[in-house]
Length: 148
Image (cartoon, rainbow, N blue to C red; front, side):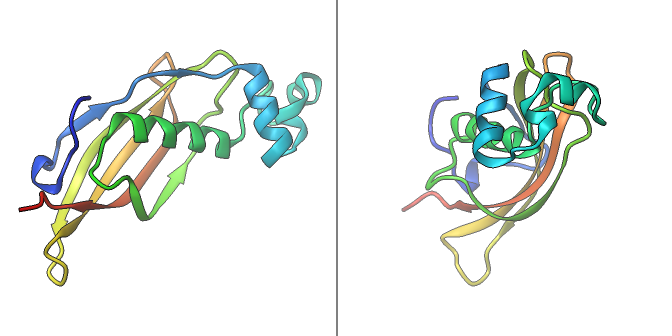
């Protein structure tokens, strides 16, 4: 998407879809080694015997990939400044999955005390190549008004 988005550019019900990223076995294991070193993220044999029934990316890896896609696909002026939310992982991200984030604007609240900004609530679904959600987040984002 070209351009920078300000509060005035957004409306409730508006949707965006990010570009894709494909998840590799190597990336899953590298992230897990550094940040979430559990057997079902690191070892195919151990993962087969786990709740996941196979190698699965850490939910935090999926979250980090989703954040990168959001930064690239939702060019909010001043950056994506989160102010809270909730995230669930309804199914695992697997090696070979190609992820996109589908964003819907749920609510826009201009600030009463700071007229240069507002709060936007979004619902973000990170989906695999089959359209199945692997992560669902509802987030609050600070969004600046257009200067001038």
